[in-house]
Amino acid sequence: DTGVSQDPRHKITKRGQNVTFRCDPISEHNRLYWYRQTLGQGPEFLTYFQNEAQLEKSRLLSDRFSAERPKGSFSTLEIQRTEQGDSAMYLCASSRRERNEQFFGPGTRLTVL
Amino acid sequence: AQSVTQLDSQVPVFEEAPVELRCNYSSSVSVYLFWYVQYPNQGLQLLLKYLSGSTLVESINGFEAEFNKSQTSFHLRKPSVHISDTAEYFCALGTSYGKLTFGQGTILTVHP
Image (cartoon, rainbow over all chains, first blue to last red):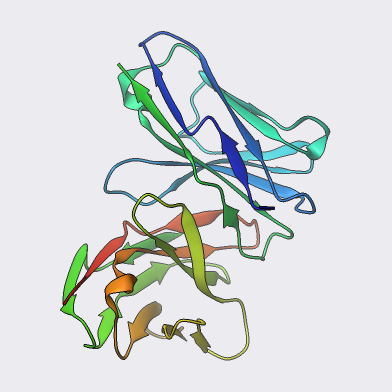
């Protein structure tokens, strides 16, 4: 399967702990996006990269969140000092160009106890 | 700012009946529009897209959507639904920056 992959698929953590998620985009795609989806809502944009450059961050992305994409390949999203409100599905998507459709990974479901 | 409104949170329908899922958008710039589908316990899959050109776009499984600039709408239609179409459908708006703005989703439930 050459689609977008995310790891882990599920993460349960205690409030205050740090968590890190990984996304591997489709290999020839230079744009990578992170979204967050809560129950009953559509995905909300968090941040995106073009190659290794982080071009935009949503105001939803507090100082506790950081994302990287070293070498323009895979990306990581880290949440420090997790809070119960961080519980959500974190989705990664990639695309070849800014206009093209985005291909989504299966998501990482985070539960903060 | 951009926004997307899906007017129905749930749409129940019987098998082989027609269905329309409504989507309205707001944007001050040129937009690209997409419909994504999410089957139970699966990720988002692109159903169809409008980038430019013909305002009527079709998917391989019988869905179609029409871009209506004057009405700022991009409604999704299918003339005859199947049980397998049961899923959550998301309308999304893209801009030249690439990020997508999603609607709240419409759960389509097809009953036998």
